[in-house]
Image (cartoon, rainbow, N blue to C red; front, side, top):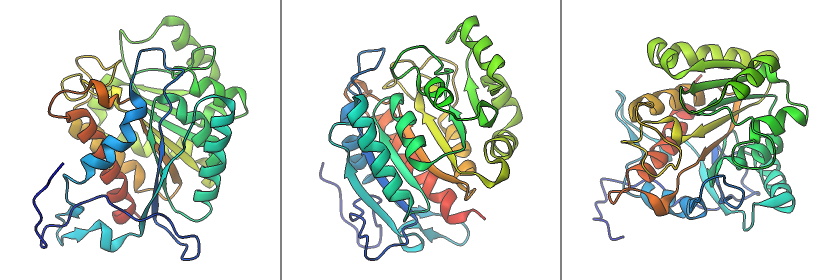
Length: 297
């Protein structure tokens, strides 16, 4: 990709590898290209590289006022990819990498990969609460991209500290809806998210997931969005969130210092529209996370 160079119009991305000696990173990216347990055929392992490339199409500038360059106000690094993140050994590698990075960074952003990465990333961060932006409960039995929330609960995460935003009609089952209710998970369905707006639902989610000042993991499953803006998500459906709604929720959540990790998942870069709109939305979610971190309390 050849992009026009303008010294007065800097591009996002291209951040350096983290240097442990310097320390004190505001945000670090980590590629977690998991895909082998996906319930749908996927090329999600190609997505971290595609998101990094897409970031170069955007500026790191918030208009404000006053205007703010994120790369000047934040210390941002890119730790590269976990080579083989699938399976028990791969998940152990993800946990170890996230644990190491969160010890020295205010926010770690995992670029998926499918939704299975939520499980080891949240555990590596020592998350005590989870917020999901997802059309699905992810409470399935077994080990797959449909099971990370159930696996976290079974390994000891308090389900009363889980909030699921955007759960959609016609994308789930009665059995899994009942499982969420029985566990005490807070569910805010798609219609209620849209009716209440980003500020209201995020405030509630942060209060529940971040009770007692614990660490929060934010799971951004892009298939919560309408299929017109996320055709590269195998399970996205017509009628999901608009791109601007997802971006507003992500920025609002990231403004809270208790959000220590986030993942951006379920984008298949190999199945995207010719204009790359799904990958570009994922890249914008990276920038919204950084914007929240830069402008939050």
